[in-house]
Image (cartoon, rainbow, N blue to C red; front, side, top):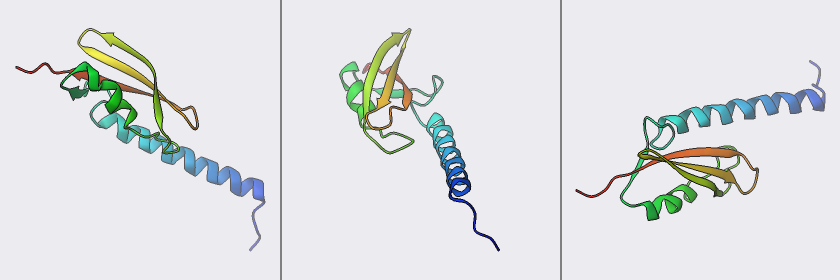
Length: 99
């Protein structure tokens, strides 16, 4: 048996981390808010940013900040960016008015 070179081990580890992040992103897309077909339902627009910033980065578990917030028809798209690694994420939200 021979020992792998440090570069080879590092590259293998980087590939595993990339696969893990990709899996987390796929799971997040299935959760409420992860896709326009499954928006996160909120009672008022005032809680959108609070809910959005309560999420964590899928790559490094860092804090997210709201980069941009825009309305498209009945949906709101909230662009988030990680404060630590800078990775971006989009959250889809629908304001459900009380009946």
